[in-house]
Image (cartoon, rainbow, N blue to C red; front, side, top):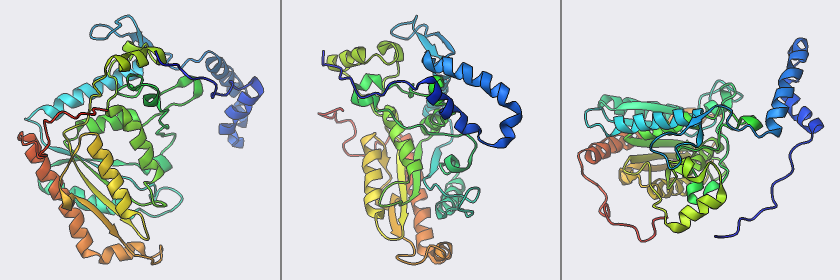
Length: 356
């Protein structure tokens, strides 16, 4: 057994520090009339924090798990059951093809910027194209993280770096009620990915990289690439058990493999090509299938021009608008081929020498 390294984690908050942290969410004077009730809520939250009540509602795992008696979070079980149902629908040849459109921009007109993103407009073109081809569409607008009430994609904790079987599919790190890490959107997002036959990510470039809302989702999808569908095999987050499983031989299952993908990446100065390459490499690593060169688009809009006129620039970019629609058509065609049994990729079926 490899050594489990310790010493980084800070001590738990003291009671006074916890009080200050808890009350920061209730600074509005409108809460003044219910301070007594907040005192009671804070007291319960403090006890839960001390007792590490991560998953207060549990049930025995039951048949089909390595340890049927192990108590699983009811929230995790519900997510897992939705993923299994989505997978069955996705594999049913009688269902219509479905493409997930992901808006990677953090801007929308319901929050500080006060204006819709160009990416959102591009998504409407792709959606209309797919629907004209009788493809079902599902839009995942990641900008809701900046405008919806108490909605979160909590950051990945890096369980996979301790041992792959410690990274559960779907992720079991959240919700963590003891630390008020709740309302995690990823439970719904996993289901959207599983239900799709194809995925198109449309995103701007932020400082040469993916916008933070997009990168949060990407990191939390690590469990789709080799993740462990049975948390009882590691009795939750028992690092030693997970290490033993991986060292004994782990298959690194690719839970989203075989879906088609396309990309629309746009920038105004730099980074569009590198981000498009990064996204393509990431999706390919997970076993998704590129819909081809015309389905992986990177372009500059308003190169070194003012931000203020960027929507007007997009209005005049008719060739670019056509290219976005071509991405959608290419993904639709790739989905049709994949669902007919055509592997598309020439290396399909060849076992990788390095499965990790």
